[in-house]
Length: 353
Ligand code: FAD
Ligand code: EPU
Image 1 (cartoon, helix red, strand yellow):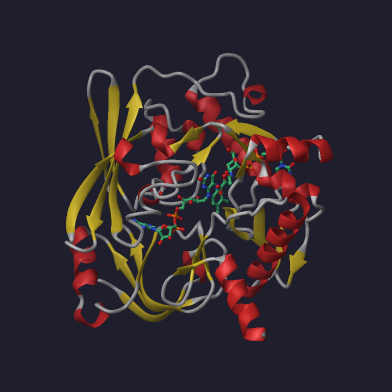
Image 2: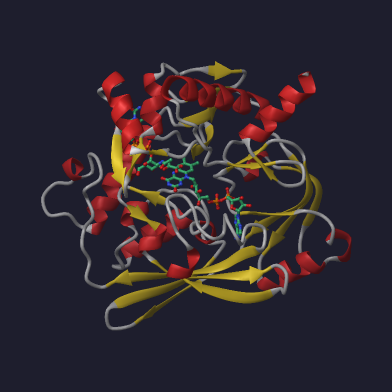
């Protein structure tokens, strides 16, 4: 029998740890549970929200629907001549999976160490860090098609992976619940240490374990631990702008940080925010993190409005100073559906008029 909590308080189910409520909270431990939830007569008309560990979401209001904790567990290792093929249920913990794979001699996930979240959420925004993205290790993604309630499978190239993006945020948004991921790890391992200061942190010949340790060390030094101070990682995405726009900005800001991204330039949003003097900017209990300006933290019992006020100020300042419109990476969960900063502040302004 599934456990259902009506009017559940959600602060321990998302890493911003802000008080938020939903109409029903339910834990899904199997595919049958998921099907029961989606066919439940009383819940048919209610919006549904799958939750992994809540490390990329902000509840902007009471969620008037069914929040579903994805607790599908299990992993299986297969192999062929050249690869280890891992099949991992969606509710497995991603950081534990990475450490377990390194400990068991299956290499390739080490750069993605310590990224909070469930394995089944990793494909949604194509998680990435330190020179690797989920797409580089993905074999397939299996999901429950929420219309037909049947399982479907996409190969890696069918997932339309891009920087912090995939088909699951586009055509399949709200239509698919990921149940399993397949990972493909080459038996011929090559270290990837080109990102930032990673190389300098590794003594002698790199090994997967050394990379894992180095990535953990850098992440611990920069990113706030959500169990100590609520946050959802990078609040905004790094914006991609034209080379002409970048060249203009470079004249005015010679130290601006950007990397080639196809024909364009991906700019370090953390640098933009930092250079605009916004580190430490706060509203109520929320503020721009002092060690990493791309992160907004709940440092003192913040409410969602505090985070929204800080985020809006950052967005407007960056727009004014650099003519760049930041997009948030964090998913905003509104009363019945996903929302975003622009919509929320437009509505607020309209109310005032
Ligand atoms: P949740 O926040 O629970 O869910 C995210 C979204 O996916 C929601 O819209 C939810 O409804 C939906 N969803 C959840 N499960 C499913 C499912 N099974 N099927 C369909 N939809 C689903 N990200 C990076 O890419 N790189 C980083 O380096 C990084 N560092 C971070 C550091 C910190 C300290 C924190 C707090 C976050 C960081 N993030 C990073 C963001 C976060 O770790 C990832 O987005 C992660 O994949 C979120 O997983 P989750 O299970 O917590 O997702
Ligand atoms: N920077 C500053 N000031 C700051 C923050 C950054 O000047 O306050 C500069 C840094 O000095 C560096 C550059 O900006 O030159 C990039 O900083 P960093 O290496 O910390 O990476 P990031 O671009 O801020 C991205 C991801 C992270 C991921 C890291 C490592 C996005 C939105 N964020 O951050 O992912 O862990 O690279 O690969 O792409 C997340 O998505 O939640 C996340 C944490």
